[in-house]
Length: 289
Image (tube, rainbow, N blue to C red; front, side):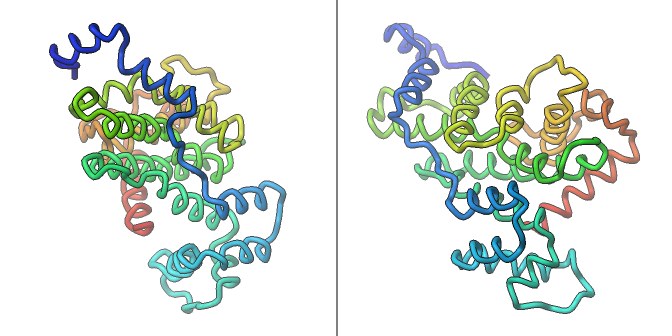
């Protein structure tokens, strides 16, 4: 995908590329960055400090939408056969603190993917579907990688492309400021994603005070040469390809080969395990919906 000749001429005449302009806008703080909701930040803090279920319940019960979602999930098909519960404390106990944290983060992060401009709604929706599918795929792969917690892997998968949200917000803000000058087609916006989202995403992760390993994934998840110590990045790379194979991507590819990736080699995956992974991830996403 390439920028149209008319757009190239316009950018050349301005003496700078729009990509550089976007980056400058973000660095200067003229773009409103998504905010990690207080409830999600507090739940992360509690679990990081080995807090208990009672503390987490105290946070969740203040947010009706989160409380309702946790109750629904605890009574979902994943727990078929267990008695229905209506108490939030019991729901947290049934799900486990790790799953509760993942659910709260996923629901909270979704707010960052809300379209600020109706014309971008399709892009935001696809970005969200790709992110959450990648998160579930990464979590499914976590047990095959010693030393990686499911919670960290899930969060890394969920946020690996968060920089694209920031870029899209900036494009929308510029378009609103000057519709004629900044009216770019989808292929052009996708090029800006490719060139900027890793750097911009790391900037947002710093603003959210996220752990170093998450920031590394956001910055390096397209790196071609990975070391054995880069297992978290390799898992997220593979999980992102799983999402693309399942159609949850800006660049869906049902024919993509997963076995030749660094992640597949690291995790010693074969055709049978890959097929099972795809089925499991589809089930996970359906349950979250």
